[in-house]
Length: 619
Image (tube, rainbow, N blue to C red; front, side, top):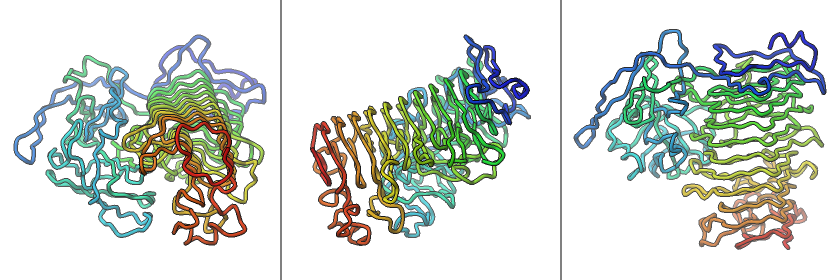
């Protein structure tokens, strides 16, 4: 790659067939092609190239017996295999057996190979007696210490926490305690035989909406939890890898690999570059303009890249907040980025964000995202070249867990386009999530969203502020959205959202509710239907059927098109207390913008069931 800088613009670096194991990240820097003559990094024609972020475990495996006492008497006996990682080998955070990812030791047990890790019934449930102590919580009442009280009685794969006899102290707790927010906290204290434990939280967690009986969690990463086939554990103090195989088969009979790399390739200070036809296994790519002055990124295309298990947290190594996701972004958002991701596939990503993207006028076309994010943990992505950066999305928690999150475009008249992408089988709250303005989504196919987080939708977004021009509005058309009837939390198909308690029809204490969005010719089925909050929207020619009859936990009457209205539906009706308390921005006489959906248009939509409410014009 370094030699490209001395070659004419338009030159290529072509890799021959094979798996590439590099003990360092390949740096691509200070490489500038020309419009129409980009530099190219690619597999040679007809060759299949994969960057592999693992090393093989070649150490001798030995059997070790284990015993766990049960509170009511008796014990559980078993055992697992152990190998010592040689000194000098980097510490691992993922393990694969014959190419299949194995799960970190956990309670309740769940597996990747049968995809039970995505099912909420294979997590443990909290109870109304649980408490949260974060001061960011709405209606904060000091609940210190943060305590999870197990509400699990009958579990598909495990008994209750108290009956299990495990000691959870020192384990990581994966906590869906904020509806669309899931965080990882360490268990500070737990007594075997007891049904509750306390856990540590971060100073900047975002658990604003806390409902104790909605809690969902599982425990991870201690030897006490290692008892189920396909589980593994790394013990840092001894450098031992512990592995519970299927039928206790010897790992000597299989290829065992551990992940030791974050990024195979890191790119910055680059323009007019194409990276194409490469595979990534247990590693990924980082391409970012971290600083507009000396480390910019523009006119870069990622074409036909294959990602298998590209990103995962390092909770086993004590990193409970940070992440190293596939990154594709330009921090300078006030100029066109000309960044394009085309025909790429993602399989088995863990944690949010799956793809960290930013830039005005980006294009995401014909990409596939499948079987991703079985934890839905919200993380703090780190910059690669300057890890101290906390600007933009780096070094801070995002706005929840979404499978594929799209930032706004900041340049007037320049839209980000999200076209022909497929998103299916994922655990995050939303499939495709869009922020606020100048984004067009079309011809996308989103389906099979699981219920390990509350709230959300197959596609969801906010919208413009009341002061922004209508032509900046979000446009969503000709998308297929279906099959998200999760028992715990059925998802909306398409959703213009806002905070239920904020009735800001005009700019008051903060941003107004969403304005000037379009939902046109979408097909939505087997989910919660469509939700429309805000005002001045155009909702037309959509087809909606198979809506969950309990999408509002009401009288069992499904609402295919749920329109929040000043008149008779939602939380900002003129007679609602939220609206009355915000009388300067809600139902203000003479200002139709402050009457929710009074100016929205609903035209020629095909509905199977009741229209939830009509705040504007309906035909």
